[in-house]
Length: 325
Figure (cartoon, rainbow, N blue to C red):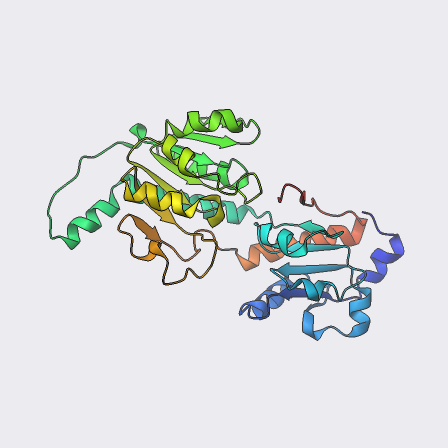
């Protein structure tokens, strides 16, 4: 939606709120970083806005905001999330007229690619097995497998998946990838659509999940799809917890069908101490740390998007609310 020139011009004097959950400890740091990135704007915490400011506000920057706060901004047209994943925001807002812009940051893709390579190497070089041997005081070298003999498959070939694929190729691995629609990436065996998913899974030693959470991907990894993996395969989930059916994953590990999983994301975070993943010998558990957003680079990207909007009235690329990304 393109606002009138007068709306764009007058909007510059209206502060842009940063709206986050009430208990979000980094809100102040975000306000400071965003303000430094766009000195011509006035970035404020939502609670610092006057009633007059709220009535005039057209754009807000958000991090899992309380929907009730957004409802206090009657002229709000669009929101810019500082997260790449916006599925929680879509659910919280429900049937909304608001346009949603998610963060697309090359630095985030680089950080994720680094994490994918690091934890793929962790599994490739049998680190979980060596940790178990140490606990049992066993001195024994395991057979070495060259990267060229290891098949790594990526679920999701967007910006994060493509960056991860390039990193894995450079390390010498065989790399495949799956997406809803056909992609073409040099050196990557690309699969697409529901019919080709089990074909790729059957040729996988380590599966890395980087998919967005949507109605189509919820519980995509379940008893059937996990069974399509070869016995002894491993899994890394750096996407969203709900993409994996929790009970089916537990069963696949207990049966020995899966050798090991690295889990960085869960449906409830922090993960409750009563959850089985904490103590399972075939689980490496991480505290949602695989690819943290870089405030400085993210703030520069948000600033650039807002500047272009101020100058032209044209919104950045917005998400498809029905698809969830």
